[in-house]
Amino acid sequence: MIENPPTLAVIGGSGLYNMPDLQDIQEYDLTTPFGKPSTPIIVGTLAGLRTAFLARHGRGHYISPTEVNYRANFYALKSLGVTRVVSISACGSLREDYSPGDIVIPDQLFDLTRDRDRSFFGDGLVVHIGVADPFCPHLSDQLYDACNATGAIMHHGGAFITVEGPRFSTKAESNTYRSWGMSLIGMTTSPEAFLAREAELCYAVMAHVTDYDVWHIEEKPVSVDAVVAVLIKNTQIAQQAVANLALQLSPDRSCNCENALRDALITDPTVIPADTRQKLDLLVGKYLK
Image (cartoon, rainbow, N blue to C red):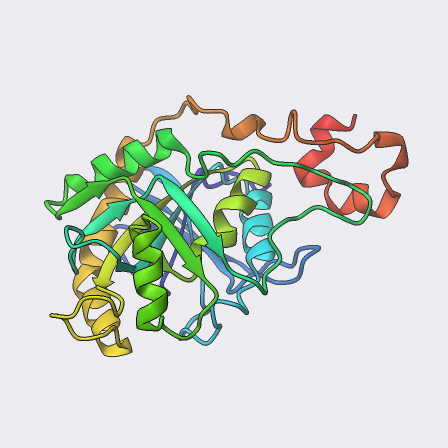
C-alpha cells in the first residue's frame, strides 16, 4: 500500500481520467504475482478523494476482452489500497425499455465466458467465494445516485450476461439471452465481479447502453461505429458521475464485501504451500496468521 492510498478505483477507457479537476497525479507501473496490469495506474485527487484510474483495454484499446489480465488488474488495485471499484462498461440492451444512451446499474450477473482465469486461488489453496449478489449493493446505490445527478436517463437493476467476445452475437444467441431474462450484454464484467469479491473490494458497474445487440428488428445490428459514437457522447456524463461519486462516497462500508473471504477458505492452513501463501498474502494473510 502506498502513502495516501486511493479509496476509489475506476476501470474504463483510457480517456476517462482526462479530467481538468483531477489533481496531484501520480502514475504507478506495477508488477503483480499474476503479471502486469493492462496499463500503469493513474492516481489523482478528485473532489478531495484519492482516486485510481485503470484503462482496461490498454491505452489505445489494443487488448481484447479475453486477453485482459483481470487478475493483475485487481491485485494491483488492491495493493495500492483501493477498497471500492467502479467499472464503466459499454453494453448492449436486451430489453426494449433500456435504450441506447441510457445508463444502467445492474444487480445480477450471468457468466458465459470460457477462456478466462476467474479466481486468484488454486495451487494448494481452495476458496469457495459467495457471489449470490455479485455487485456491492451499497456501492451500486451510491453510484446510481451519482449518475442520476447528471440528468442521464437511469435504470437500477437488471441481469448482465458476459460473453467471451470479441465478436458480437448472432441473432439466435441474442434472442436466447432475452428468453433467459437477461437485460444487458457485454464482454468484461465477468470475471471482474468475482475477482473483486475475492479481493474483498466493493464492485459496481456503470453500464452505458450503446445498442440493442442484434435482436431488435427495427434497429441496425450493433457495430463498432455505433458503440464508439455513444461512448464519446457519454464520456462527459461518466466523468461527472465519477466526480459526483468521489464527492459523496461514504467512508463506511455498510456491506460484507470487506470480509468476503472470512468463511470462504476451506483448505487446512497447515497444508498450504509456502509459495502460495506468499503469492496470496495480500488477499488472505489476515486469515492465516
